[in-house]
Length: 100
Image 1 (cartoon, rainbow, N blue to C red):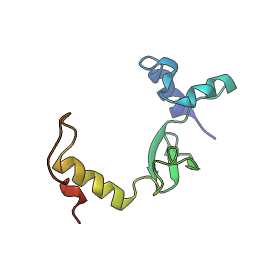
Image 2: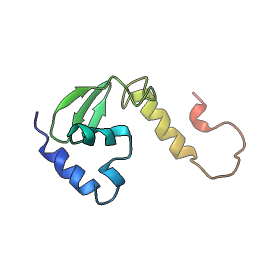
Image 3: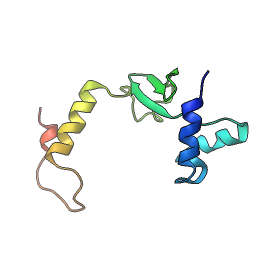
């Protein structure tokens, strides 16, 4: 499996993030591995920066139970951001993205 672009991305990330990653992926260094850098995801499939494809059995620890980039979830997220995001203060009423 080719990991050239992942290695480049990791070396750059090391300049900005301690350990080069922002998750438990840091433990890969102990195994002598370079972390994966994911370019895109759809459903249960991840594609890294080198074009390698993987099945994501974790789905972000269950957060993406419907899979990555699920069309209905993506559409609801867009509607939510378009109607309101985070103001740090209470908002009246029901968010418009909940209206179907």
